[in-house]
Image (cartoon, rainbow, N blue to C red; front, side, top):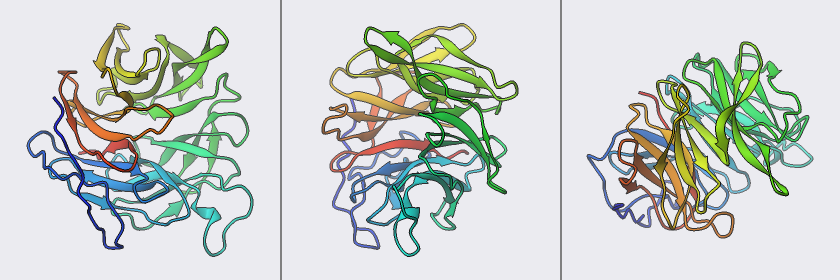
Length: 315
């Protein structure tokens, strides 16, 4: 049974609410999560200490969106996306597109990484911490790119990929990128499928029997992927062993949609976002799911605001 974690009316230094749980859940797990929440209006980046329930706001600003935080391999930086360049003094003109940014783990030293027109999404770090893979619609409906942090040099990794190449996740060894694309025809619609990109050769291949799958997330050893399973309602979370092809159910709830899985550094927990709605009303909250016992779930947040796209800080 999930533990109720009802947030109290917390007040930050700037007198704005935080998605903070009211009940502690000490002893369940340890780790620091970065995640996005729109509890203050437009999405901003927060951290949540899983052991204590303490929440901190890392970004602020009423006019722009800060989304999709991802910890650097050394835990010193967080990559995220934002359209903040189009607001405030010296704002850029035109449609407020999103770019990739990085900041220190405490929210300081925010730096813009990409500047091209178009929307850049879902940055994922290479293991050396020197570059990021992200998806973008700058030259197509959706392709993958790699940007080097030192000088902003950008390399296109896919070209007009069928069904859009989105939701990238770099493997722990840095050799492959798992991503999702709508490449399977199902009646009048195209269904998502997980693909793997070999960074050395540039070749891509679909993961077998991965129809209806998106939002891939690697296990720490790189031997398996977790993903959202969309060919059931509400959605569930699957685990895929890449060597054997075995697929197992990692989490399902008959009344809640499950999305955005990320695996803890020790491999024992998934952090997921759960919602009673899909795209109508939503109301996403964070929860932990045991990787060894799919029935064990621990709620982390609830109440106002959509809390999602959490990522674990590396140890």
